[in-house]
Amino acid sequence: MEPLQEFITDLVVPHHRCNVNIIPEHITMLEGAKSRKQHSRKRRSHKSSTLSRREYARLGLNTLPTRQMRYEQALPLHQLWRGYVREHLGLREGDQVPEVHEPRYEEFSRQLIKLDLHGARLQVIQSKCKTLEGLAGICVMDTKNVLKLLGEDDRLRSVPKSECVFGLTLGNMQFTIFGQHLNIRPAERSVKKIKTYVQPFM
Image 1 (cartoon, one colour):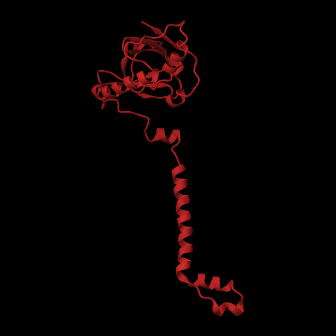
Image 2 (spheres, helix red, strand yellow):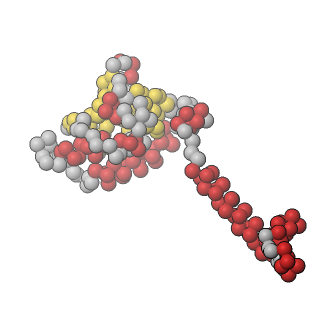
Image 3 (cartoon, one colour):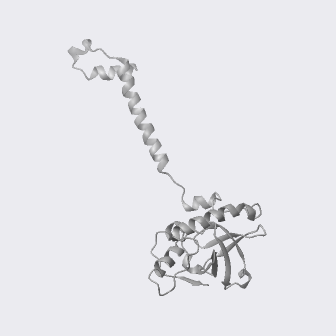
């Protein structure tokens, strides 16, 4: 504190320095305000720092255990998804898929493609890799290029989107979705303008 008092005293004209009355509490307040500003700046810089995709992957945050998940544990997620998709598509009990010639068909198809698939029950109905055909399960992870499906045998399988055509059932409605048009992250897909790639069939 003494060096600071000397510095302040030196700022006064020499013949008035003897009349200077320094109150230590005021100096403490100035120092406290400065430290608070520094702390708030540190907090802001800390909040703005986020993990990059590479760091996210290195920490293993985009992986799931292949043997520790059970199909029964994913069923509540599937029930939540069914409620979500009906609300998202504006479907009521007994509603039918709009016909191709109906005006609302285009918008209905786009909204279906924009769905978040976490919790959806999907089946691979066609694939360039024949061993993938027939695989079915609840989607527990949707990345840019891969869907991770948890099957009834409690096995988690990674299915490449671009190689497959998926079947999706909702009530009495069935849909065919081409995986190559899902090759985008879910958050980006929900806001991206997408052409019609959905073919409903009954």
